[in-house]
Length: 456
Image (cartoon, rainbow, N blue to C red):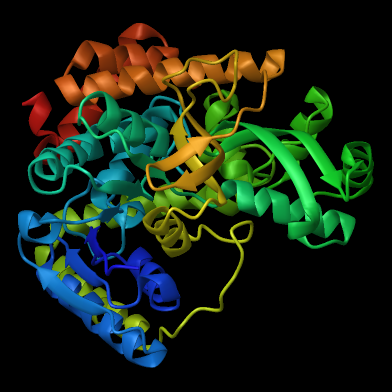
C-alpha cells in the first residue's frame, strides 16, 4: 500500500506513546510519515524521538518529525489523530491541571461532587467549552490543508467533541476512539471463563454509558447466565452501583466502572460533602477535594515552586518515554486499536471496529445526529455503523436527555453563549436551582477565562 501521512495533534501527550507503538507494529503503515504537533514543542520532539526508536526496533521505516506549527503537521495528511484536554500546554494531562481542579472544586461549593469530570456534570461541560474551539481550529486547517483526511479523536467529552467537529467544523469523517466497551466485553468474558473473541455482543449507548442488549457464546444466548453469575458475586469497589443498576434495569451496564456511570445520575449532588459520596467513594476519593484545593493555593502563592514542579514532571515524562517499548499485538475487542483501524481504512479492508460516530439509524429510536458508541464496518470512506434496533425504554430516556445536553454544550461552546451553557447545567442530572446554577456558571467561566476566547 502507498505510504500514509499521519498527523498527531496534542502529540506531546503521553497517550501518544501507546499510539506510536501501535503504529510501529502495524505492517500496513510501514514507511509512513508521522508529524507530531504540540503546544509544547519540546514534548513533541521527545515523542518524535520515541517514535524513531520504536520504528528502529520494528523495522517499519516510519519517519517522524516534530512540528512547531499546526499547518505544517496537517499539510496533505491522510489521517489526523487528536488528543487534547483543552487546558493549554500541560505536563500531566488535563486531569492534573488548575483548570480541571476548578471544574471540580467550584461545583463542590454548590453541593455537586464529581469523580472523573470529563463526560457529564459541570466539569464535563467545562472541558467541552474549553476544548471545542481548539478542535474547530483543527477543522479549519484541515479543510484547507487535508480536506479528505479522516480524523480520529481520543479526547473527552468525546460525544461533544465529535458532534462539534461535524456540526460546526465541516469535517464529516470523524471517529471517536475509546476502550469502555472493550473493557465491558472482557469483564463478561472473565465472568463466563471464556475469551472475549468468543462472545457475540450487542450494546446501545453513548460514550461511557451503554447497556448490553445481546450476549451470545457460540450462538447460544448466555445473557441469563451472565446476569445470574453477576448477581451471585460481590462486585468490587468501583462497580457496586453499576451492578445494582444492572439488576434494576434487567440489562447489564457494559462499562462497569462507576466513575463514569455516576455522571449520568444525580446521586453525587445528593450528599452533604465529599466524604459522604456513596459506594465507598467518600473514603477513597473524598480526600482528593481537599488535596486539589491545597494544590491550587500552592500554585497561586508560589510560581517558583510551580516552575520547579513542571521541570520535575518534564524529567519524569522523559524517563517514562525512555522505558516505552513495542506493544504486544492484540485484537480489536481488547484494545482501541487506532493503528489497525487506520490501516483497515487506508486499504479498504472491511473490519468490525468499536467507534463513536453519528447514529444515522443504528439505534432507531434515537436522533440520527447523536454520537453513539457502536460497532462499525471500515472501508475506504471511513466507518459505517451496524444497525442494532431500538434502545429499551429506560435507556432511551437516559440517552435522550444526555444527547440534548451534549447538543447544548456543543452550541454553547461554538457560539460562546452563556445562556446555552446555563441551559446545559439545568438539564444535567446534577442540576441545582437556577439562581445558584447561574452563579456557579459565572465562577466556572471566570476560572477558565484565559482558555475560553469565545466567551470574552
